[in-house]
Length: 299
Ligand code: ATP
Ligand code: MG
Image (tube, rainbow, N blue to C red):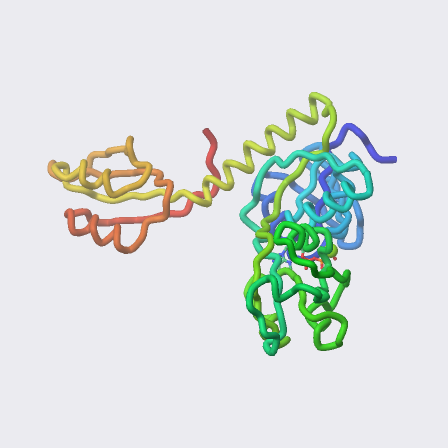
């Protein structure tokens, strides 16, 4: 029997979203004892169960309310949403947070020898894809009379195999396309991983736990974008120093032993410090300039 009082989170069991989701859960303090082949993993320090499934199943599990949360690529989520909408099935959910991992784009690519003069060149053509609903939506928006052909795998070999004239597939570097003699022509969807929540009432205790996890997730994401900067600066140039450090309105100033003219400046900067800025700081007379990563932030 499944325990309904525990928060159920669906994540991809293995694949491109797995590492990002697991790393994030670890960073927000969810301790897991994962045994490789098991569908369910229990957190040992919080009332959380992880459901480890194929990414295709995650949107449906959330939209049917079988799990409370899920980590999923926006491409897969949007495709399943459109499919369920078309079939008249439940397709409600709430997006809690866009993640910094799982970035990719869904693009139309054509064989090198295709005489491509813009999207209208696809008129009357067959385009192989795993995302027929997203592709059909694009065709409709662009007023292109083309046909989406559903293929679950090996999309990139479809033109060579004579199954389609072009393809619409996920791309990150473009190396796979190139290796298959294909050229990327249109980006139809840009995707990242998102954390989604099921629609409907959430028991108080679960909602509190979700809020706590979200605060921690924001803390981890904010920390990634921030740096802790330490430097020694001449007292007379503090305003110029502050002007060079983004987000440094209220730096901590500490006296330096044996020096009346210089102080130590400590600051959390919202941007990474570029070499150019560090060189400018040095030109202002600053020394011992250190830029440190921050692991977690709260408040
Ligand atoms: P599963 O066995 O879970 O069904 P899969 O083969 O469908 O796995 P993966 O290849 O692991 O899926 O990709 C999962 C998700 O990762 C994609 O839906 C997409 O959101 C994201 N992703 C990021 N970069 C890429 C990429 N270069 N190619 C494909 N997907 C990518
Ligand atoms: Mg899949």
